[in-house]
Every structure is written in C-alpha cells, then in structure tokens.
Image 1 (cartoon, one colour):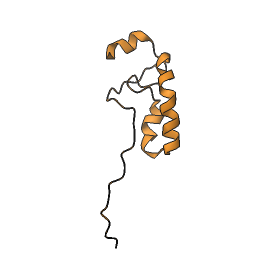
Image 2: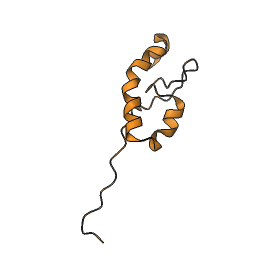
Image 3: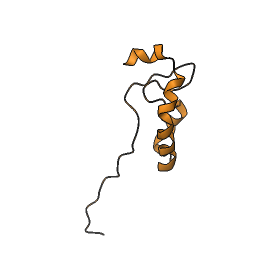
Image 4: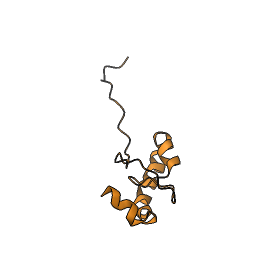
Length: 73
C-alpha cells in the first residue's frame, strides 16, 4: 500500500452550460452545440475525441437559426 494520498480523477472538460434543448432541424444541443450521441457518450470518449469535438463546436453554432438561439441569450 502506498503512503501517497489518493487524488480524485481530474474532472472531464465539457462544453455543457446546462441548456439542454435539442434543435429538431440540426440535431444539435442549442446550449453546447453537441450532437445528442456526443452528449450521451461524452464520459466514455477519449480525451482526443473530446478535444476534437470541442474545436468543432464554434462552427456548429451557425447551423442553428439565429431566431432559435435568441431564446437563450
């Protein structure tokens, strides 16, 4: 047994802002711009896959109509 203190695992980075509404036209969450399948699998994805998705999110915003997004601003 080690004398080192146990450390909790580092938290997983997430783009979630607790606005979980899926846009029916695009299938994207209007809060974080992830696909529902990505949201569901987020904990199990590799760090590399999560990082790749995170870099794509800003461009996904443009796929949702501004009128819909205005509800959340």
